[in-house]
Amino acid sequence: MTVNLGLGGLLTEGAAVFGVATMIALVGLGIIFIGTVYVIARQPALAKRIGSRLVALVAWVNAWFEYKAVGWNIEGHINEYAGRLAMQTPGVEPVGIEVQFITDGQVPESFFADGDLIIRLRDSGSRDENLMRAAETYVSEILLPRSKAYMSPNQQTALDVFVTDDLLASENPSAHTMYTTKVLAPTVMRSERIGNLLKQFDLIHYAGYFYPILLQELAFLSEQRVVKSEVNEFRHEVYELLDFFERLAEREEGADKDDLSFIGKYSRCCIVIVARAEKAQQGQTSPWVNYVKKTAGRFDTVYLIARSRHVPLMSTVARAVESDGTYKVFGSRSYTARIQKNGRWVVREATVTILRNPHPIAKYLPSHAL
Amino acid sequence: MRVRQLNAVHDRDLEDLLASLKIQRKLEAGEIKCSSCDKVVTLDSLGGLFFSNGQVHAICDDLGCIDTYRGRGVEE
Image (cartoon, rainbow over the protein chains, first blue to last red):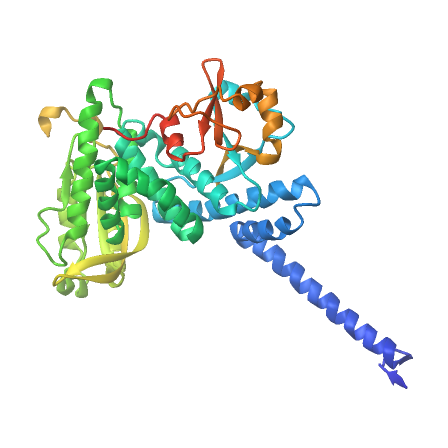
């Protein structure tokens, strides 16, 4: 049988079927190619995780595939988290990771010069263990390195353990389980103080303040210069700051706003909740603008917090205090908050806008002025 | 996004690296201890390597030992 395809000739039925199948295959391959390019361009971390799985299948062919299977798995998960961390905490610079394998016994000069750590990674079958090790090293190196330099070992460890635990919980449940049994639980069993710090972080994180506000405030601490004789004082103040955020997390909705400021030697911040419904509905900005302006000269950072429906009002307040130079808008982030109402936790979608004093005072304030 | 390089050695290259750092024989003889917890480090329990004061040091695969390497850890 012949078929007239209108292409200027007659083809046999077999050739027509072959031609149509070839066209479908080419279109399919084109779609797959475009889809792959799209995923690599838009979601590089996801592309690495998928790529890691694929090259692991052929890791026996060549060492290159094995290195990529191990490295891409780590980079895919950690870089995904790094992006989210930067989204949640404006003052934390997004830092990704690139696994550099040392091959043929070639040790980089930086190993001898800087004392860099070379971590041992297992083969691509040990994905969870490799991710866990890389995550711990990554967090301890990139999370607030300057602020942590003055913190106590317990404070540093608790921060690193909490963030590594959160990274693994969100990225890989089985690596998270391994981390819990091998690191988190033994650490808590060794130190009551670290356990208490982790419980504080849990509560602050549950209320939604950990990444957008607490980490931000700790990041601002990096601007302080601390001399040796002040280190204990600094560490004590970090404990007090954490207590302040714990009280904030436990606060009842609509409770008295007297306890929303922290005045220390190294950190001076306050929380302003843009929430009074009747004033907000009337679009009145002056109560908040006046309140924030009154804080000028006393605080280095003001965190404006508003539920979703009051965000336009909060933005107007922020612009008003920025326009007269009282504060500069440092950043704004949306987050899911939980607040207690009548003894029960309720979920609120909220946004925080960070106002920063253009002339921070904590660093230069004489201690008698506290 | 700024990228931090993580130096790593894959299991398949581990012995070459140890040989180039001239610590393979010591490790096999049980003469190398973890810089953090002081336990003997074996080829199986090796977690990482770093260089300090002109010497190569080893850390075991106890994850808490990395914290101690960075001068952290747990206060009493």
